[in-house]
Length: 223
Image (cartoon, rainbow, N blue to C red; front, side):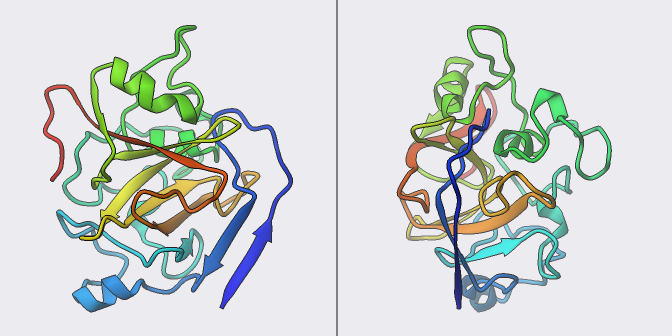
């Protein structure tokens, strides 16, 4: 059963809000994970494929099946392309305004999982989500069109855009992201969801997939 939820347009710095989000099979394991015989959610991600959900399936933070590795500042989920950021702050595990990113925004969540070093021309760390791909490329990060475990997905729209952390990629190019301010918009606690996304898409008609940010220069890109 799916639950449809619509949202009024909101002005949010650093992250976009989709107007229509479909929540399906909330709190249930993805069929891909079951078929692969993977362990329970509490374990680390398998490598290199990571953890995958069916396209359109969402698991919300706070549900019994939500994995510990996906919370902000959670343990590293397997072999990933980029080094994790030194995640500090309070209240744990949800650091307040981590590295200047507003708590609960999509940029905030990704910054707790991947190092963000690029800056806007004005000097702001990271910038709005939709700026990340271009700014990261200029800063020496590898970028491209294909999802990879550990990469950052960048979506653009008429507003600030959206970013998400790729935690799994299926053989057909479908990918799974961990993110905040998408399903639990506002943002509101516990902020984070896991979501299955179709190859080359974003999961929202209002968002365009700009590309993916991989490892910084000199570090290997996960394959």
